[in-house]
Length: 225
Image 1 (spheres, rainbow, N blue to C red):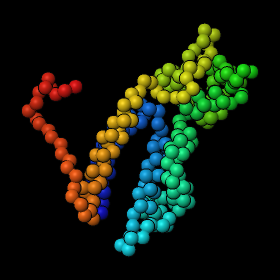
Image 2: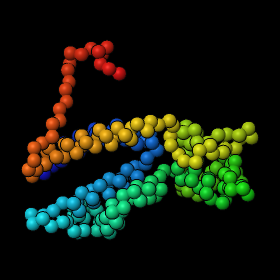
Image 3: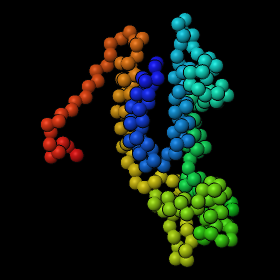
Image 4: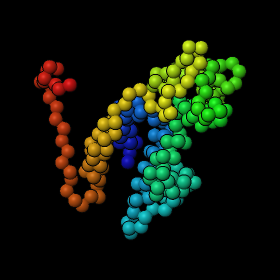
């Protein structure tokens, strides 16, 4: 594949990823979570490929094809064999600072009262405080930025004495529509699978019908919302 073709493909992919990135951000998914899933997909498909004699690719070949180290390929291969566990572990390992703060707030004894409930924390000052909680799980990420994001998501509330308390156990930024998950699985996946099938030079079966229509004669009033 020539550089110009790859450049055009990557440009097209970038355009497609813009709305997908908006959706993932809306659901609180970080780039590291997205990258982990992306690497797992690359490894899965590279292992599924066969050579001219029908032999499956080995780890070294997959490493060359994907650009990942052989160690990373081995790790991801084991995860791909357990898809559900891979997704769950990926989410917990690579969630962003707001999610990690909420998790620690509900599980770390330093931020729990004697009954095991999350403490109402002052913003800063003597520990434990909200700033020390953020430092414990997110390093040098500004506590104010995490506080603003959790507040925007409706995950914390302020008490009359200026402390903050969690109102949610898990971080999801704002109100989200679960139908988006169904639509991605039910529409985006078949569309992408169809493009893959139709553009495969080695296919021996008929292509799938895929069409799109456009018109420059429709007024804005005629276009459905």
